Length: 125
Image (tube, rainbow, N blue to C red; front, top):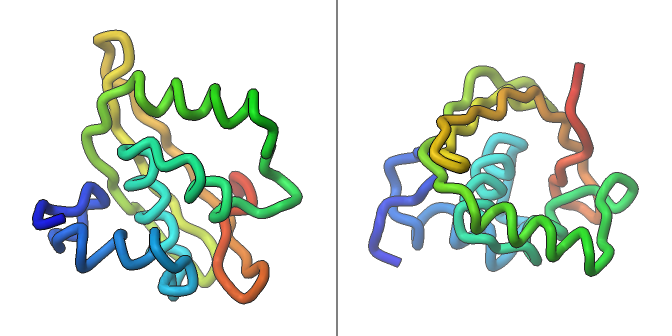
C-alpha cells in the first residue's frame, strides 16, 4: 500500500485509487474513475471493473469475467496518459506489453452517473 499508484498520479496507492476501489463514490470525476479503472486492470481487480462499468454495456457473465481476468493478468501494464478531459469524457492512452510487443489503447471514453456514482459507459466518438 505504500507504493506509487499505477494510475500515474504520483500519489501512493493508499492515498489514491485504493480509496476509490474500496468505495466507488470517492471517484468525484470521470478522470478519477478512469484512473481507478486503469489501476484495477493492473491489479486484475475484475469485481471493481464490473461495478465501475454501466449496467447496460457490461457483460457480467462468468465467461466474460474469466476472459477479462485472464487478459488483464497476461499483459504487463506500463503507464496511463490522460490526454484530455471534459465534463463526462476522458481521452487516454494506456500502454502495455502483450506477447513481447508494446501495445497502446487510445480511447475517448464516455462516463455517466449511475446509482449516484460515475461509471464507464462506452467509447465516445
